[in-house]
Image (tube, rainbow, N blue to C red; front, side, top):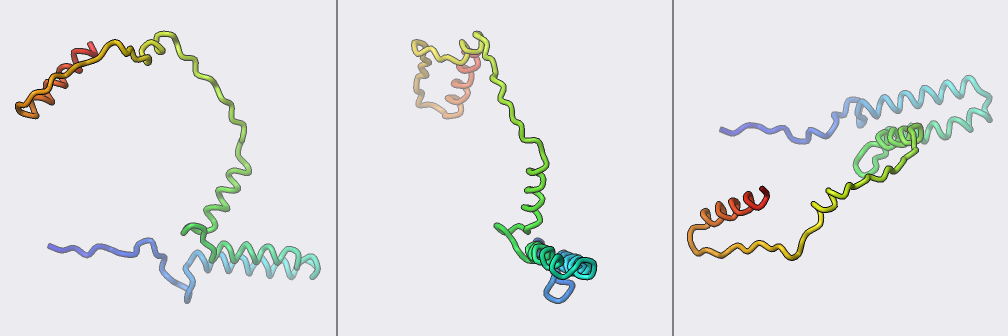
Length: 135
């Protein structure tokens, strides 16, 4: 029995002409903010704020970095900017007993004789040897 598997589930639907819903919201919000700035402030001051607002609106709506929308990188930048950046390194003290366990004694070696019989028996035998050494 064959089932239809959905494809292209990561592609957003185009709701407003060639724009997705998110793109439309970013553009509508940006254009609305630009209109408010234009009406409230004098022209020379408005132009200073309209240009960065328009650039940010365009980046949010259309620009992708490594296949991800610009908003992810903007959010990561704000999180980094406003988070604590004090990293303190604490040295871990290793006790003498742990050092002894970590050191390998080169004089002790395990010799496992080779057997030509069944491989399963060889694996079981080598596991038994290793279990006995650990005890």
